[in-house]
Image 1 (cartoon, rainbow over the protein chains, first blue to last red):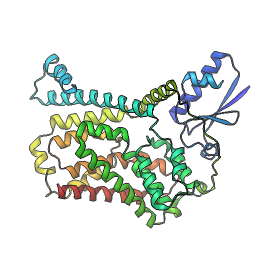
Image 2: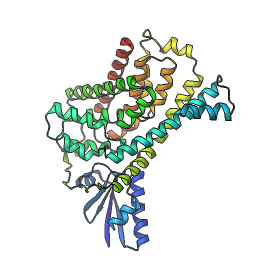
Image 3: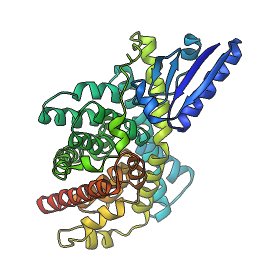
Image 4: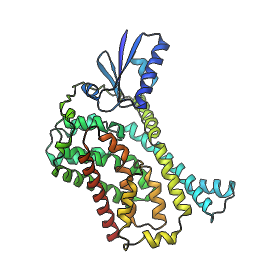
Length: 76
Length: 318
């Protein structure tokens, strides 16, 4: 099971990102747990200033925009 | 082209009278909506393709550790090319503080960023011409420079929330960018979607307001009350009016176009544009998470005074 964190202070783009990841994972039958990280100190801890950011296995793979489905499929 | 299209649609197909208020307002609305959105899509896509849109993480790397004058110059110039969303001003503020960038420089960045950006600059040239675009961008850069310096004098460090100083940013390497043409295209399309998705409301509202002004406000009244140098109160009035009004830098352009068209003085128009774009209650409330009220009041005060001086200056010169 992959743990995927979505970094963002609760803005719409962050929620969209989390939802997209869950959808793509479900399509591909991959078992993931999507966690939303909303605490600013934690977000900054990943070195990310522009949200939404995406962290997979504690590694930042994306920051600053809503990723598209193809990108998400690539990470999974 | 856009003019011809609006004429065809409004005066021919809808058969409205070109002399009527409604006809003029609608013509303005159709022409500016099509023209601005066309320019927006084009400019953002091209910037995205060239990767000319900088992320705040990169700006922070460029600015940190530089001597004050250079840091400020870089912060302002980079602020002008960073597509800014007020939702990211908190992490941005903290990130700058954490990098040891002086607060005055951070404020310069925060002033420049919403007021000037390359997308708005291109549209400004397209709608209002070179001269006004240069005046707006030039005075905006100046205000950002002076504003940051003045803020620094008041030692704003004492008003920064304590937790901000305690945050430590991780040294995570941000993901490599995909530099193939397909990757650039994908990135540009995403940028267009994100930025247009964020600002289309402001642009439409700006065009609608501009259209109403263009169609319904009588020219004589404008020239008499807002045209000349006699009315000293017009500029501070415009600045005050701009505080509760909020739009982004692109959205204020059609309003400015309508105002100038009716003969509102240049300084008064510039003051209103800047106030609407850079001084806004929602952004203040977001910044409240990192700085306390006295700093916010100072920030608003410094900007209001600067915009008023810019407005008076241009009304006096031109």
